[in-house]
Length: 248
Image (tube, rainbow, N blue to C red; front, side, top):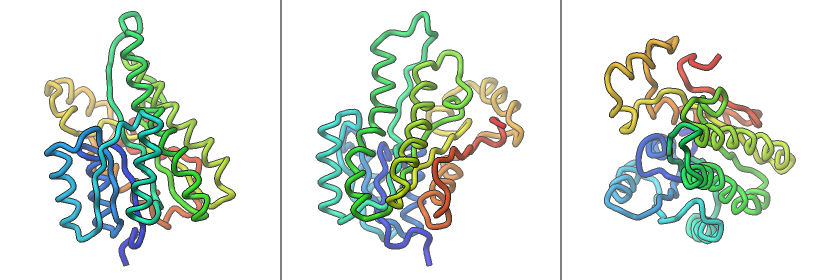
């Protein structure tokens, strides 16, 4: 039997990168997939078709994850369409890097709103649903920089640290209703964004990682499969690092 057979997963920002990898792995394990992105563009529709090829029910939704009202509306639409949501993966995120002395208020607000407030929005909207179901798994996509910080990424690091605090608080608050919440902290993952870095920069990164390589989105997705499945039925309030030993 597949690990996520019969489950419905909602993944935010899943048109590309880690979010897409998570959606595909979940689908391969039998989960029906609802996913969101800002617009229903060609890339989103291509991802939707790839997921559908796994033989599961899938639907993409246009939603600004940082907008409280839009989030509640899209969650209502998803529950109406799918009947339930067993797994929430808060993956939507952006970067607007800059040194503190040069960082603008707009850079700070955009990253906090899209990375952290979006997670609050979706958890808030889904809490009544999961409480009624008496079960659910919430997975917040954090980062190693949310644990250790990073120069030039004060906004991003703060948002990812917030994802950890949010997961731990939700785990404590909703555990009695059978709802689990955890965070995943990926390290240097090879995506379209990191692939654009100069070769020497990537080599410096990899040389500082005990496994001597960057990770793949699929490796992060495998951790999410564990957290979304009943294999992790007694795991809650935790941060699981997927970083090749980078943070120890």
